[in-house]
Image (cartoon, rainbow, N blue to C red; front, side, top):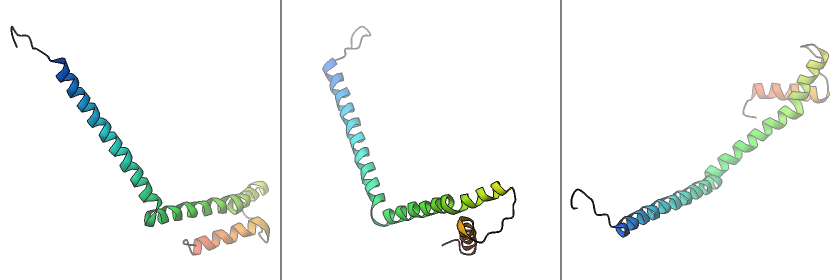
Length: 107
């Protein structure tokens, strides 16, 4: 340093920048590896079993709604009544399914 000026050695600064960039790239690679490992851990073992059970349970609810509850609700709308005589068909199945679910929610 002379006369208030700073002598910058560009090779030293460039080396520092390169080392910092390498460090950031290594951290990013490590983060990606950990994310992949965590995803694998969630897809296997107990985590995978719980995840799959949740997906299966959700699909069962979707099927119940699409195949039974929705047709029954549509029948109510079509007849314009809140009370419908249910003896057979999708409406009867939906009623039985709703009663069974109300009695035992874990089914």
